[in-house]
Image 1 (cartoon, helix red, strand yellow):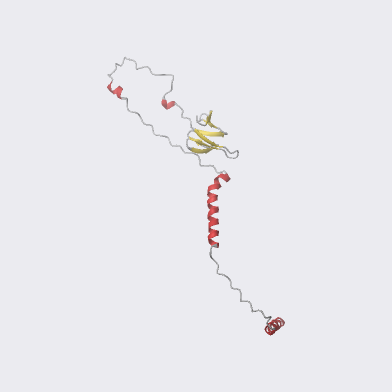
Image 2 (cartoon, rainbow, N blue to C red):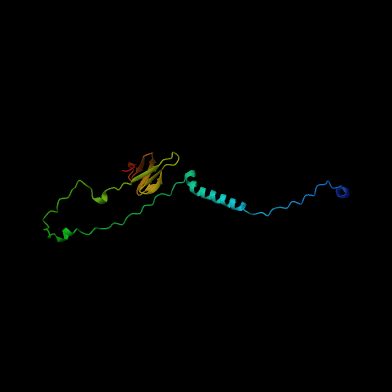
Length: 169
């Protein structure tokens, strides 16, 4: 250990005894204070990446929107027409007026969903049905989406039968 100390002492003495080279000695280097715009740029980059992830994330990773939830409208009974209230009472033996028996009652008419658009992607096709974005397997009311093609959607009724919806129909 003393050999190292002796060598260091000799090196210092030779540096002090060296004649100056004629050039002025260089001033010591001082470090700059940290801060400035560096942290602002880092923060801006992080915010930019977070925003890009929120916007592009679902499209890149093929996330499906949650299944559409449909609410059933409450049944409202209509008041009798004004003509019926003003019509004279009919005799019980008089048959009721003839009705069109070819058409089913309005309550029995099946309300098919309306296809409004298709976002076709072979990995994850989506469709816009009744204002909701749905994928294969999702439900729209009582119907289940079975297949999504470029311009149509195949749905399955509760009884197992299938129907093809096309845009604008």
